[in-house]
Image (cartoon, rainbow, N blue to C red):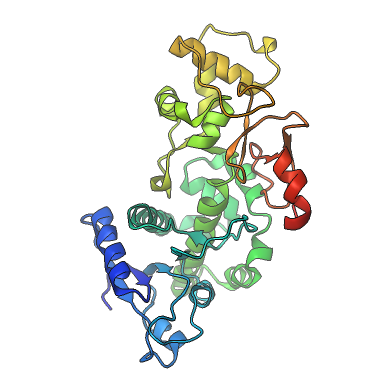
Length: 365
């Protein structure tokens, strides 16, 4: 091992492993990172020991396929790699080309799903790598954030230069203790007065905050909106994503994990709408999405495309359903406002009505 930060790729198919490694190298460019590969085989008599020998404090991200048994190592699957990584507080991604479920599973805060092809997978891995590196660097540059014993939400808000959003971020963190109580307890026992503990605290903090940001805040719209959520916020379809990105360019998010896709600060989107000057009177509209759509249409001097909804004809919205991946509005026949799978802070996330009625009893929604 070198002293460089590293990414460990695990697969039992040499050709696929080399292909992903090559694409990842392209995405990382001149970034000084050591891309390590491991192809588990029968020579690895103790797979857990073999895995642990390949990670250390410089390991930023581990990526594993699901089935690792083709080289004769029976019983080794990606779920074991994921468990070992999480115990070591090392971010881990599941790169499973053939092991995909038709129904969504309950969101796992510490499970990062890598797209199952080399092109998109490499882009995602690079974005996750840069995201965790950015959080770690921010904590190293601002050790006072830990010495002042701020809340996890307070630290994240400070790192993103949005300290006034601490209360909104805090809502996303209400389940952290249930998701990994051991890590939270370990964080509480560390002392910022000891340099060794400070380093360990920085590692744990970046691990926890990185997963909350990547897997919760960016995934379930609230203070931050993805391309899809922004189109829903303006009651239009993804066909207008590029047009909206131009309108709201000043609201663009460029923080950790922004390489995963385009994201926008909701408060800056609202400020842009308000700053467009004379336009439609908000009192003449049923909801904020209707108003947002009208303002953008006025600015662009054309109608926005309608999204695919038989209830409203595709002209209402405001909220995003992450399960059906489509805009929904607050009408009772269109969406359900609460779900055990949606974080408390995700105020612009709702569950599509038909999906909820059909699958809620089966999925524990």
